[in-house]
Length: 377
Image 1: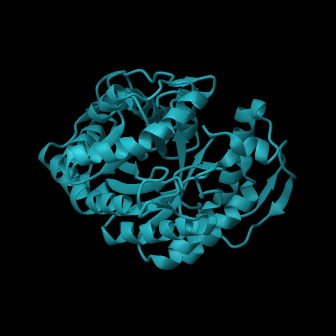
Image 2: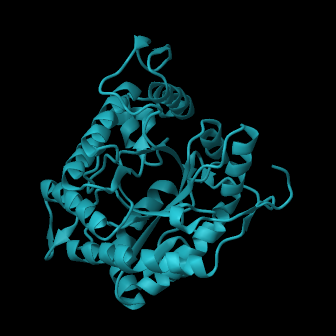
């Protein structure tokens, strides 16, 4: 690809819509649910996501109080038995602190149990608790990820693997069981704002998932452009680009904002101290809902906002992170229902009415990180 404009038309039927959970513990009639209840709720919500026609249900990987998603393959295996068609994956797998051999076996198992519906998003981690928990040095953040990604991709793409590295025991003609399908399962690279991560995804021939949790999401159009140019330079075909963002849907804009703010504000207050970005204020929240990366509002409002960013960021997948710590389970359920039954059909309708003519124009991929951590929230 050169610097000239190149038109790329999004095929409406190919766009996927998913739900992401970080295992945030809900409340039920004002009572904080137990860990077991929160885990079973995730399985119920995977069933609901399927029933309202969504394409993907994903869970994250975190190791902190208030979240129960520290063992995603177990959750997804349970969801596989409760569903029949929805694809099941991770919104992030912290590959740096996983053993690629064990990860392969776990997700080969989930894929077999689900009848071929498993997938992964691999990331380096913005929440880094797992490094100390599993005995890894955060100073080796980059090297660990690169080595483990190399091994995991070889395990997926080759029948037998002989391999030597620094962070695990060597392999000699290893063939793992159970087997994934030839070539492996769908695997994305998740990024938080680093252009280097964009290029890494292209170099390895993996789809790109952009985690955009704050600020104007249009800033990531340059990342999408960098990715497509890098794919071309590495001799690879165009691959999907996805976006993960936070949101909440209710019957009216006012109801959605009032409910979401109540639970979003304390979570982001804690996160702002950890990551060094703006403290949440009511005024800033209104900006995030209006022009930022919070997809909060009525079905019509959220539909227009998603359709706009699908066009701007050349997306073929949009995932809504729907849960927040202590958000009531009935509010979560209603938001999921509105997303599947009203928002997704409306987004497709809007895109049919005004198809994207996304163009390569030389937009820059700005470094949206500080000290190795994403600061776009």
